[in-house]
Image (cartoon, rainbow, N blue to C red; front, side, top):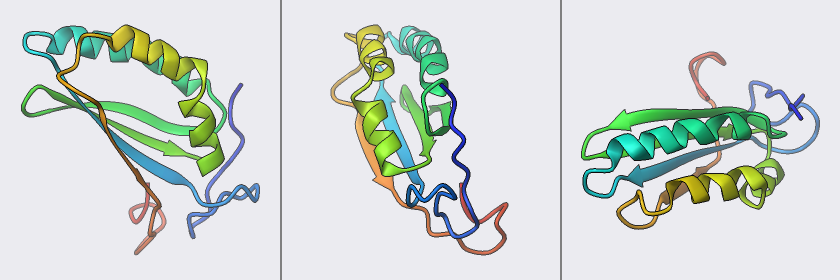
Length: 121
């Protein structure tokens, strides 16, 4: 299923679902497992992209054997459903044993500023 939620310049979902939610998740690879972790995450991404409300779900390599996952969801309800859904269960299965500790997850609400194109994800 794909989402039809869009975002207005004030950061609210145009379907009345509320504000969009941006997430940064940080995965730190277990020693010697960075390539395996990256491959597992790459495999998991298409399942997430198919979820309702997923507007952005993008992986980025970072220093210190970390991978940052930048996410944008149409609403908090969409993000909550994602967290409880099969795509996250699959991601957890694929990454089991590949991380050095827990994944750090930061949930944020956009504060648009400046131009709509540059002032918010």
